Length: 144
Image (cartoon, rainbow, N blue to C red; front, side, top):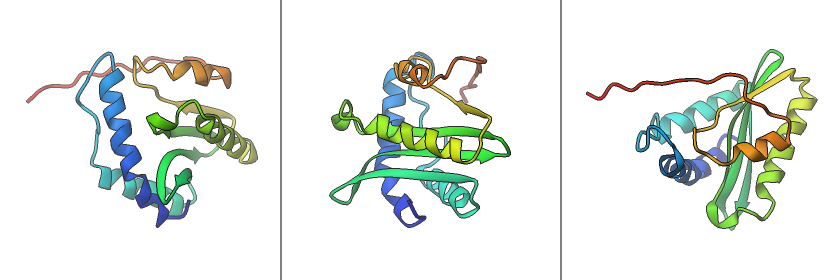
C-alpha cells in the first residue's frame, strides 16, 4: 500500500481495537492505546522511511484486512495482522501471513517478533508458522 491508501485502514484499526477489548483476558476497554490518527501517521512514516511495509486487502474500495510489518537491522516485527470478522475463514489471513513471511525472507530477517493480546486465539495460527512464546510482557495500568 502507498501512503495515501493507508487512510483506508482506519476502519480496520477501529475493529481491531474493539476485538482486542472483547477477547483480552486483562485490560478490557483500554484499546486503542493511542489515537487512530497517531497510528495511521506512524504507519505512513515507517512506509516513507522504508522501515515498514503494509499490505492491504481491499474490496469495493474498503479495506477488509491488512498486515503491517517493520524492520530494524536483521530483526523484524509483525505489527498488525487483521481480517474483518465477516471475511475470516476465507483465506485472507493466510494470504496476509504468507506475504509477511515472504517479505521477511526477502529482507533476510533473522528474528521476527509479534505481540498477541492475552486471550486472543490467533496464537494457534502463528504457531503453524513457527512462532513460539519467548517472553511474557506484564503490564500494570494505574487508573487516574
